Image (cartoon, rainbow, N blue to C red; front, side, top):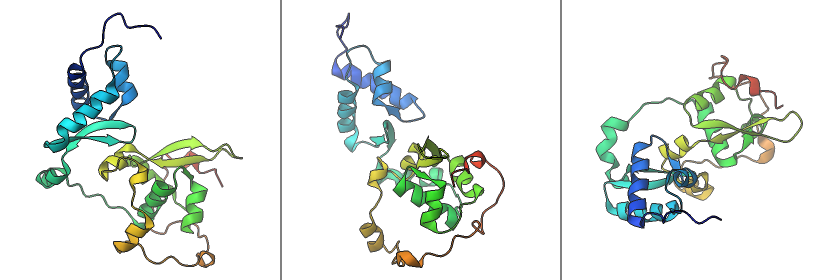
Length: 213
């Protein structure tokens, strides 16, 4: 590896540079993206660690969101932003169940979602989640028909304050919070029906992906 023509900036200066990039970016920035912008020889990972420590007791915190980093309001001060950030979004039960399946089983195909839910997924359900930018299309499976998979996005992780999908609560935590009913026996799943009764069947971005049966 070639030696840089000039020595890298001091760590304090690298932290200032990373701080400036993160404040100016509307989206989380990855370590690789930071390395591409900083002078040769810089260590963005160390600069991020220093900034996270510096902002640990401030009004904003440096959070890891998926593969990227971004500044967010400190969790204990979020109530101050409540009137500015509250946004009503109505999700049907079908959409909530589909989103949960994608979050916990990603990458997952439409056929797999239908198998878990026991009902067919309408086009409107996936379209709504994609339009909200909580779900995106992942890689196609290397199986007959090359079905597309679905995964949650960094926007989803950011909304729920998660670093990664691994931070989702487990079954024990959900049951303790009263958010999960006792599961029926595996052989007692309802028969597969045509589609969600409460969903619009209008076409959308996922229309051409429904070929994975």
